[in-house]
Length: 152
Image (cartoon, rainbow, N blue to C red; front, side, top):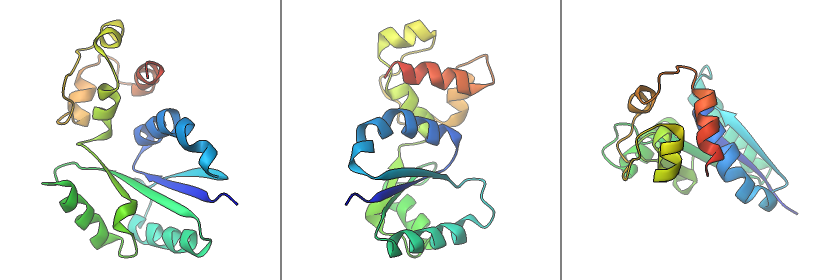
């Protein structure tokens, strides 16, 4: 019998990216895939610990996806997260280099960047939310990320 997969993501852009780009590639491996956005949860670390305990007791699987942000390396970011979520397994932590906004741009080739009217980046490792947002006049990013994801 297939297991359920719970994907913990920080916010709506992470959810959008993983639900549109990654989910179609893995959805057949699981009975159900559920996203849990945690950036705005009150008492989020305690709630995540409780979610993980429940998921493990049901013999299901989970992955937590976090931005690297300003951590010095991926191991540092994982260690910081493990100090807040003591029952998390290290191999269940996936760290996005540097922030999820960089992944949106990493998936664009030169032709698609031109179609969207944005600069093409050969390396997106240091793209932050602020750099990403400054690329666009529009402040509502949902239509922008929707157009970007259609290029993948």
